[in-house]
Image 1 (cartoon, rainbow, N blue to C red):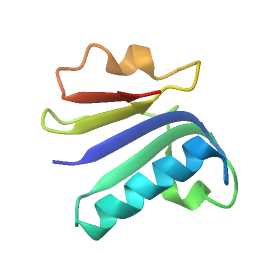
Image 2 (cartoon, rainbow, N blue to C red):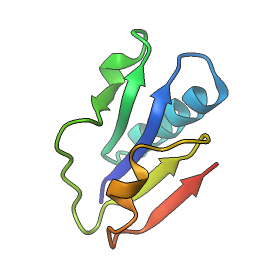
Image 3 (spheres, helix red, strand yellow):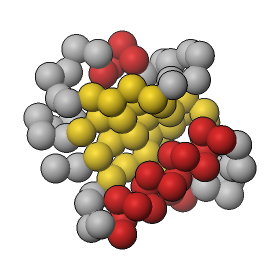
Length: 89
């Protein structure tokens, strides 16, 4: 199982950005493969992310975490997947 986090904008130092990064760090410590997909990220954290505008491979056993902050470009790509999903608002 992998954990895939989706967030439209990942800003260094804001609440959502800190939360996304904290989840990723905890998963790393637990040895769980995880990825952060985003459309926009600050240069301080861009190396920790995967661009959302390209092809995204989602396996059936992947856990999807969608961080919804009032707008989501990714929700239409994720809603019809049969994966377990968590929506964080």
